[in-house]
Length: 595
Image 1 (cartoon, rainbow, N blue to C red):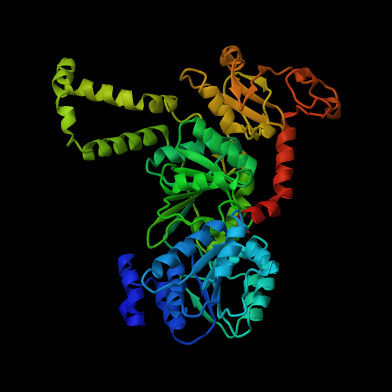
Image 2: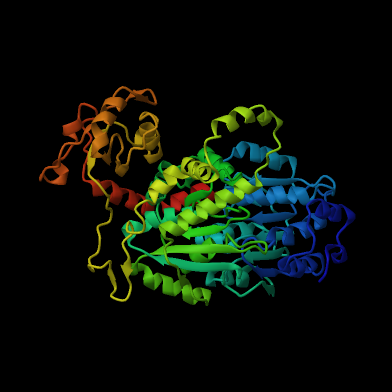
């Protein structure tokens, strides 16, 4: 195997490589770097995310750039703001000992004026998202006439996000004699078209199998009822105490609902979707990268280009329609030689999608049995005992308290002491699984039906008796499920109030709580404020048989804003409207996160 010293790097680059802890080049680096440092040929590199692609093109690019020429010599295009920032940071690390190399990241969501000022000072390498670069070209701020190298990173992601026209427009601005490198996880017909149009006899490099997922990722699925998906998700999280992963959902509404339920149930989780501002998005990602969150619940569009190390699990709460999207999802774990797990929650109507994915992967996806209550409790207790064994006890300040503690516990024998400690630590957790395994209805796969009766369940079912409540806060107030859950829990003196269906409308909302909590909750919340607005909660009046268009919210008009505006109480209306909104604004969301 060739090492970095034998590749022909300058002492400054080699010193940066040593400081970054790079030992031996990874396969993609071993094949790409000699080509970039040698002949000026075009390159197509097919490799999964996390295989070292950034260093493969970044290290030779830093060495080849002439800092004495104050023109833009290299352009790197990538799909998202996060990846743009990450590449820029990596290039800066590679160039720490190579003189005054100027690198600028340009992307949407940041001040375009600051980026224009940076371009006017002169930069050697531009790292850009397509949308923002088009804006800068249109303002004559980005000048690409001296560019000699163009790199398309995560090219398949950019095409999936609808940037083909933008890429074509940008490449038309770059001189014909440039070198072009294309990095992608998959080789689609669109990528082949770009290669034919803009590349000159490219050398193709494939790491692993073309269009395959990472080899060290294991794939499995749980066959469940749609109504039981969240229960199974909880069991997955509980059976893996050290889980650190991304839960993928299909729509923003589903993403927010799943994240809110996890937060309400005490998990370290948060959502990433199109209703978040850029500052909220950055805050969520910062928490996730620092591992303050164990589970990130996200849509595919919002998670484009996220590069987080050491993910243990990818969980497909909803399967994607496009099999290549599954490949991108699963490729976010099992990186840099580590192992990862990709799990899907599948109901019978999605079996055909699973079969298409299997054909794409060219490997079977194994059926996994849902963890039992006893298995989960055993894993949690074992994990806690391991932590207890390894905890540091070198704290001198504890010594002065030991005599009184020993005196109070003197009457307990060893077994009784262990039982009490475990009960204290795991009381809530054990209570969740006290009823065993009968909470999740089994799926009868052979008969092609659900459960023992063969009848399909409703879209949403709850245990117990729930009361539907009205609250005078809605989306226009910045009121979403997590705000509702926080409002309830922060005013119930530590009691965990079971919350059922949540229907968010523009200026007011409905939510369900277990009936025994309803009256006390109404009394408590009616004295509170939210964002300087007095909170009003009451029992939602029963629906009538009037046509939907006749309903104007007058039953709760004394609390609602903008009375002339028509409102509908049908609980499916908000779901349908949000689903259509997700579909309609899909392109808008892609643009928001990628320009």
